[in-house]
Image 1: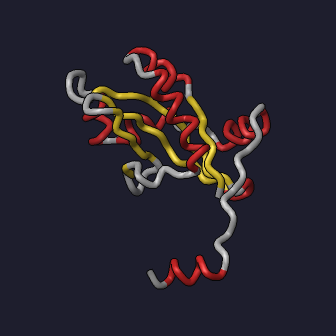
Image 2: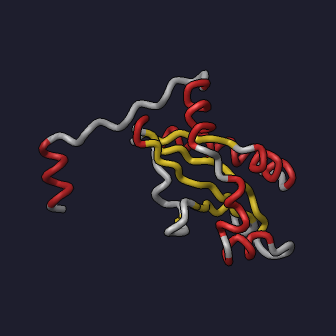
Length: 138
């Protein structure tokens, strides 16, 4: 599966509000370059994942597997300050209630994929026989 990044207006707005636009843009590109969000924190069973932005802020995204396209879209939803306003704490107590309305629909993501100017990232190649053996027997 290939990873693509999708930026919501809410994320752009909250990143700008907190002076995090440049850092968010770097993460946006990094997801596609690294083809991974493995070290991000998950909020299972929800689609939400989070990335710490230093000690004071959190980026919350959502994972959207599009099986037909062999793609997982990482939707950048919002940036939250820790403490203070209580927004992030509300999210922790009820992720679906706080950010559920920001989840993009599959058709919106499909249109985004079709309209991208940048080419889709290449998927990682399948491991060869030696790599498969070493993955089974570390």
